[in-house]
Every structure is written in structure tokens, then in C-alpha cells.
Image 1 (cartoon, rainbow, N blue to C red):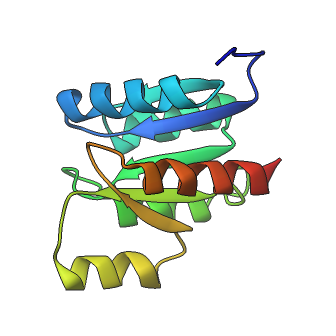
Image 2 (cartoon, helix red, strand yellow):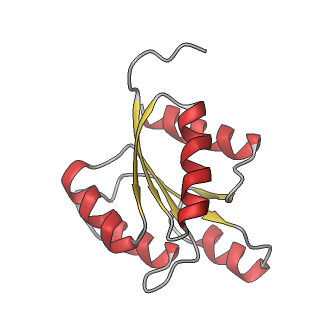
Length: 130
């Protein structure tokens, strides 16, 4: 598959470096995108403030500021509030899934091994953005 130019910019935030690498490689192999990574909500917000993104993927389970709390920070920021956020999680816990579904995230995908369904969901959100 020939990659013709950068179409999208994606911010990927996960505190687990091994998960982050796996997610990054999966996404880079699938989408022609500028992919920026961060290992904390703080680092992610700083990078987003500087360069923005078309889509944000953030891990649910992170220390200090989890994915839902990060979502609140994004939605409370006039510059960033319209960027769609997808929460990534490895949990099967129903209350966590419900919390994500009731949030202002556009949805969630399984991590760290992003499935074909997950990639299709990301693609749909990106196409909806452009």
C-alpha cells in the first residue's frame, strides 16, 4: 500500500511504554498520519496545546490523570474541545466500560493489540473529521 502524504495527525497517550510502542506501530502501519506520542496526560496536553491533532487516543488507566479525567481537560479547553477522543482500555469491567460510554469520548477500543474493528473505528472517526 503506497502512502501518499500525511493526511491526519493523531495524538497517542499511554503511560505504558510497551503498549505505546505496539499501538504506535499498529496505527502507523495502517494510516498515513503524523503520530505524536506522550506518556502522561500532562505531556499530552502540552503537546496538544502546541500543535493540536485531528484525533486523540488516550489510555483509560494512567496514574495521576486517567483517560476520563484527561477527556475533561480536553473538553474544558476552547482550543482543543472539538477534537474527538477515543479511550483505549484493556479492561472487561462493566462499570469502567459504562463510565467511558457515558463520557464525551467518541468511543473506546481495546488495547494494546488494536483489533481490525478498533482500526476501522479509528478510521471512521478520522474520515468524519476531514
